[in-house]
Length: 314
Image (cartoon, rainbow, N blue to C red; front, side):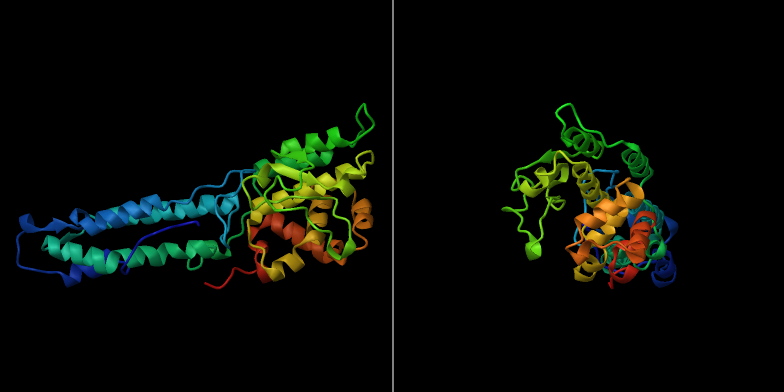
């Protein structure tokens, strides 16, 4: 998960400390909040909770409904760094006794750290990040342009596997025909009797670098469509880089194969007509103005990865 903060309390050390813990002691008898064991514990936990910044084309380090795009995780890390700076500054607040400082750190400080940061688990709820969209990483955009520009040519053996492999390599993937290697389980069944040509299993460590062609897909290895299929599967991977596992039922229905086809056609140079013909038997693969718009929205703003184009409820 994005953050794992162990915390208790309410934010605002300066707001409460200066008026609530007065006394008749001289300046020399004062103790700083930073001397309290509970303060040191909460600050240590906060530093340990710094989000890892997801790097373009690496498997996102977070899942379970959090935002995972590199742009968002970088912004979330900066946000937590600012909270750390605030806590360090508040650590200089003076109390009459160490017990007062410990009591404040235990009863108040930690919970407000949690209040300020736990919303990051849900896309920045409670912060300005909640309504900020982050476009696809520039490094990914550069690769998309390279993929789109690559010609579809047969190899010396007359097949298009080499051309497809070269595209897969650009996003850190290789082709496999072992349908269990990616960790998705046994052979993927063909839904509704429709042939599955290839698939990716991005929720597993094994599957991150694999693009699996089924026997039906390999039958087309001597056709240019073999490369078009690769572009579709790469689109799945790049959408995952942007969105992670934000694929609830509504998301899957609206941002599923049709949006993946649109993404491949708009950003990866896939042949739109060929994609339309390949998926003609399954309505889920149909492209239209809506799927095109959603593909562009995902590419330009990771907010579009959520059901209904809004962040999930806290």
